[in-house]
Length: 305
Image (cartoon, rainbow, N blue to C red):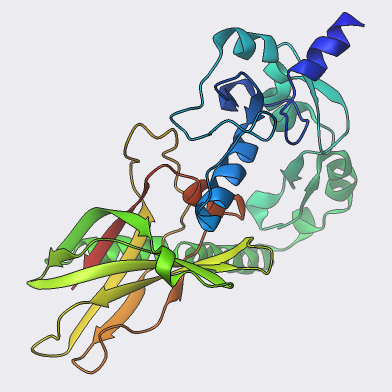
């Protein structure tokens, strides 16, 4: 019928899924793409040093070329999307509410979590678990022991953030937004490299490098960073540094934090100015495409001495 034909016309031309209205784009000709497919196309083009193109009409595609369509956005809200958890068709305008409060297979925790129960699973199985949960019958000492274990685990997960807060109390802190540029001459079959321009900090010149490890099919597998000291220090120099996402330049669309905070300890001596690369901890696999697909790849570097 007409509704079904209209639905098909508004699918992403790459993945053939209904794009979320606030994350839908169109090329200069008008072909519709979702946010994930756009970032994949732009990241793949950046890695291979080729021009990104719309997969249908082959017209050039950059973030500046893509646009939003307000009429399409309003129409998309009326379409339905299949929930990946329960398989039901849900109107996009109700999708968030469905995932958070209505889906039978949404992830929930045991109601006795406050006593230390660590069970988590689909809502549809929560009642059976809670009927059999033994935490309400535990003694005060047993519950105290469980809560201590949970608190230890929570502190361990927050250690990097606590370390960052501690470092902020140091007297010598440097931070700067750095734009990273592709080094095409250093690209190999298994890795691609980006680096910043030289910058001054603590009376020395530095450079930040980013390495992307690639599969045989040029698919990014991991990212790592290296802080390079450009001139030999007069005496051994020890520092900690941290790389995070920065507010993007050039009208970029995304300001989300794709990088998890992790402090790196480095020591520099005259005989070793480069050192090793350290893996960049990312929020998820999509984060690599988010970063590599940016029009301007900008990160914020923090250095603590």
